[in-house]
Image (cartoon, rainbow, N blue to C red; front, side):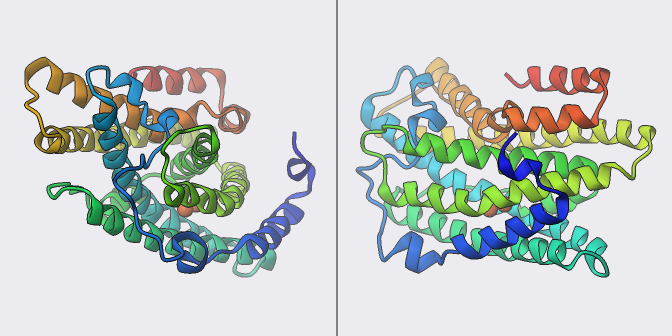
Length: 310
Ligand SMILES: [Fe+2]
Ligand SMILES: [Fe+2]
């Protein structure tokens, strides 16, 4: 248990507001700083891109894989932050006439997610300037957000905590020794993590608060909805793994066919499932909060569903 976990909830919201004010950053002044991407660099660290799973590729080809995944990273975050922000704004209503510090914490959370979406749109465009044409990301963030927000708040907050905790692990991977990793992309991880750390605390506070008002039957249905949401995320990842593998094959400069092409698509999917599902689901704090809210049987249902996504 860390220091913040021991504080009463009102103080935890207040601590998030204080930290949010202290770490606040600006896209141009702090992150981009007039820089551009350089195609000689890797964009995602090896611990996220899992380039070693791409066993048939040369070092240059693995670098291209990390660059494609970097662009997809920006697009996936742009997508998930759309529904996260909408849910946070919705939850903020419950504090309108209550704890004004909690309200301020959620308003700042929302403001930061709008800024992050802008950052990731910029990163997508900037990566596009240095990579070959033909990259596609055809998933509509608004369509996904509408589908996600059709599920119960409990399920959406479970998925949100999973996502916001894995940004911490992603930052840690980015500061591991990684030869040739883009300094600009490292800063994206650093600055995103600085604000996401507060979001993960707020997700937990809101999730536990909301959970207390549910009946056992409502919670049991919400567990199934969380499983459905993870399956929906996996559907998005499968589609993008195919799109990114096709783009890689078309643009890598040599002929790739048959079993090698299929292996590359599977490797993209393994990497994306690690980045966007398992790195959060396996986070110890996610397991701790989740297991404090559900029964052992419900935990088993979630574990079996996650085990099918290996
Ligand atoms: Fe964010
Ligand atoms: Fe966030």
